[in-house]
Amino acid sequence: MNSEITPYASNDTKKKQVASMFNNISKTYDFLNHFLSLGIDIIWRKKAIKELLKDKPQHILDVATGTGDFAFEAIKILKPHKITGVDISEGMLEVAKQKIAERSLGEVFEVQLGDSEGLHFEDHTFDAITVAFGVRNYENLEKGLTDMLRVLKPGGKVVILEFSNPTAFPIKQAYHIYFKYITPFFGGLFSKDKKAYSYLQESVVAFPDGKRFTDLMQKVGYKNTKHRSLTFGISAIYTGIK
Image (tube, rainbow, N blue to C red):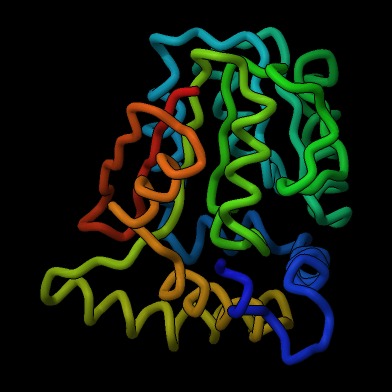
């Protein structure tokens, strides 16, 4: 599932293409993320992290951690003892490491190269798992969700923030134009990789959002799954319990 949409016209696996894509855009990723979302992505991250306030997780796994923004927000809001971030892009992790050093957060936040579909952790390791704008890039979505469930402690919660497809007029039409034309233009201008930002729109369209995604979460074993739309359905927060 979800492996047919790839960043480039290449014979490489989706996983390799996604890693290469994020390596290519890692230096401009943070700027473009905030610029293209008009800063709304920061608000979305705060809302998603607050889903864990009552749970008070002390050891969190941040999958597809990228440059670490979701984890940094979690540190500020939740004040956990430890966050481990994993990502398949060495370029993104290098940016995350620089930011960790600048913030003197090495004792709290560590990052490592890792694959959501084959996490190098023991069963029942983490109190909570977070993913921001990462699950649509999984080569095998069901396998990735299953392995995340494996390393989550019983009673632990997963919080997933992801783009979705708005359905109401005129948001649906404006969103389509923005992501299909404006995002690739500015993304290509600043990152020099226009295809990466064309892939963004394609991957969002292909992603099984809303009830289809919570149904998949339930299928692999998550309980009490919930879905909350944000900003007219442009993004959504998904939660589930082991």
